Image (cartoon, rainbow, N blue to C red):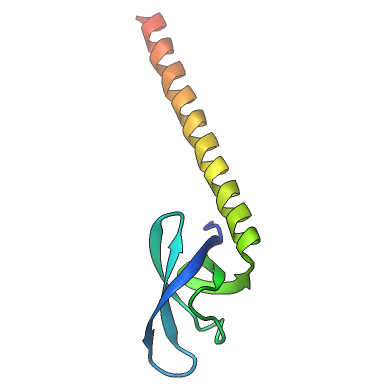
Length: 97
């Protein structure tokens, strides 16, 4: 499962026709290239949600920021869980030896 990632359109890269455009989207310091076919009226400066390489919704800046903060919290929690697991396995191996 891929989460919907929020970001801001900073550049419209290509336009093959009225319906097919791609854009560079800035999300948490990372540049993402996404298809804008589902958002024909999206423009530079809009905040969007990107799912699997396609911008699927225009959102306000506050909503985009809150989703990004939530994803960062989930990532940190996952790192802590992984780190705790690694440490516990290490200490269990020491106790067995």
